Image (tube, rainbow, N blue to C red; front, top):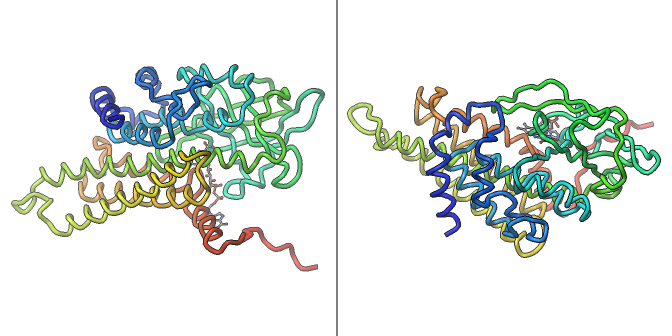
Amino acid sequence: MFADSVRRFAESTLAAGAVARAHASEFPAEVVERLVAMGLIGITIAEEDGGIGGTLSDAIVAIQEVALACPRSADVVQAGNFGAIRTFAEYASPALKARFLPELLAGRSIMAVGMTEPDAGSAVTELRTAARPDGDGFRLSGSKVFGTHSGHADLFLVYCRFGPGVGGIGSVVLERGAEGFEIGPPSTFMNGEQWCPLYFDDVHVPRERVLLGPGGFKKQIAGFNVERLGNAARAVAVGRHAFNVAREHALARHQFGRPLCEFQGLQWKFADMAMRLDGAQLLLMRAAANADRGGLPSAYDTAVAKLACNLAGFEAANESLQVMGALGFDEQSIVEYCVRRTRGWMIAGGSLEMLRNRIAEEIFERKFSQRAEPPAQ
Ligand SMILES: Cc1cc2nc3c(=O)[nH]c(=O)nc-3n(C[C@H](O)[C@H](O)[C@H](O)COP(=O)(O)OP(=O)(O)OC[C@H]3O[C@@H](n4cnc5c(N)ncnc54)[C@H](O)[C@@H]3O)c2cc1C
């Protein structure tokens, strides 16, 4: 029933502008109010914190139904349920939540994640941004790159180092405009999204703005697994969006005097796409359902689901483009956007290779250090 009601809402109010939104670089702020009014922001946030108090599975239903009608609008559902907001709501103090959650839940504010640094991508634990004790707070120095929403966010959840090693990593909440916090010029990803480098030059961080202190890295990543499932959910839904467009095309377009759908070479493409999308969807729902029994999604469930969804989503979008020929390759079709969009998720939030590394550790029940051995003395 929930899926039906989100579908009806999305088809009637979001589908018409989907192609235009896909090709606009700005965040689709005009749909925020409608999504808030429909109860699609804060689904995963507890009622006592001002959220809807729903499950992760509910949020996945919502983001996917929105993406099936308008892929770009699903980014608003991501920011309001799966992104930094979810980690923040999990770990912030009551005072910090009272200060920032109302605006985030009303869709008037967005929180970006500052994790990746120029020299710490997949090797995120090598991050250098440092929080140095200073009076009753800290001074933050360093820089971040590639952050989604970094150009327009009001708040930033910044991973930083309070001390050496993985145990020294935690996070702080920063507001745009803080003294010494500079947001650099925008750069554009292949998917059309813009990101800005972030520079911290001795930015004062009051102690109460620390989200997770030293030793917080594991908790931070556990919260980040929700973000990864939002990424996976959109990947599979955006792949299916392209599949649905290509299916209509294959029914309507004639070549050699017959509809495209009568060519077996194309039928098999659709069969393979359907199998991969359905399989990935089941893995995604397993990860969400297991988390709904209490807690955050497990690392293994998340890695397997994200790997399957990223691959299935990209392959479906790419094959759908092929089925549509030049029309699929042209900007007037949303399918080319679906290809560019699903491609980015194979890198963002843990690349396909890093997910495979994580899955292998679970299979062999041991850690495989990726670090170079120190040179022999
Ligand atoms: C669309 C998009 C949105 C993003 N949003 C954010 C965001 O909101 N906040 C944020 O902080 N960051 C964000 N990122 C950055 C993202 O987290 C990093 O791009 C990602 O972690 C990979 O780091 P890197 O790009 O530096 O690649 P690198 O780490 O340099 O890796 C390069 C290649 O080597 C492979 N590789 C590296 N190490 C290994 C290994 N041990 N085994 C096998 N292969 C390996 C990688 O898989 C990759 O293919 C975003 C990126 C994209 C593309």
